[in-house]
Length: 232
Ligand code: CA
Image (tube, rainbow, N blue to C red; front, side, top):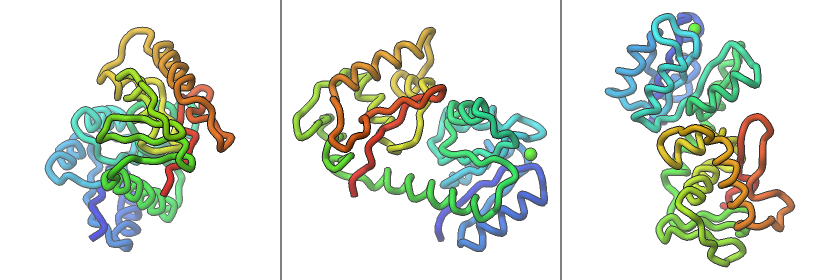
């Protein structure tokens, strides 16, 4: 068994198509067309990943995502009918781990599901200090220590939390909302500028990178990401 996937989509044809492709790959698949039922199912069946359509008849998909995110860190792959930058940012703000724009090929969906599960498992199994950019950056959760080129760097609790979040999935863009949420667990007025200033401090403390990429990269209009690959 490769894991359990909950597919939330009210279009029966599409739902059945996705189900059959996932089952062919050995996944156990639960399905529903209702947002309310999705919330209950997630709680009771504890799937490894939820494929969630934004357009649902009872509760909008974004409200379902929000509800799931308040009490679960289940992997979330969002389906959206629109492809605008705004929707993408919105999806990320809701805590989606990835998103797919309709129409999509079921094969693409299976690939995304597998990639997310791999990343999720790698994050869970990580032990000892994690190393990035060929040893440029090391994050040692157990010792609560960050090292740049082998030298320990002192970070404030908020800086630590921002860096820890960015390093969870190197290369993935995190919005300011997500960064502030993981640092404080809530949003406060003017948080965007606050996140910017923490990132500025982090950059100063972490310095440049020998690999030619910044440790923390800005993605204009979206947020920030870790510019270093995780070392094997
Ligand atoms: Ca739909």
